[in-house]
Length: 77
Image 1 (cartoon, rainbow, N blue to C red):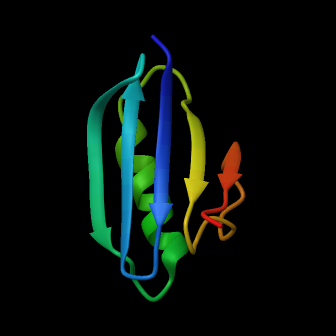
Image 2: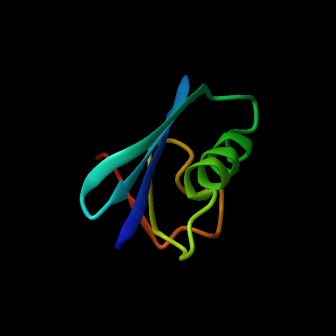
């Protein structure tokens, strides 16, 4: 099974999804804290919990450059 995670870290909320073969299987949503990297890390760890392989990670939004473990960063501009 192919897994990928997308996380959008905005100024007010950090949202994420886990895709398994293109189907959304998990969702994540929290208010973005003072340190957005904390919410990004929490989303990453929560969404990949229990998986046997490491999913591809795409980040977007305000906090996309705050962590160094993403495979891809996408700008909204």
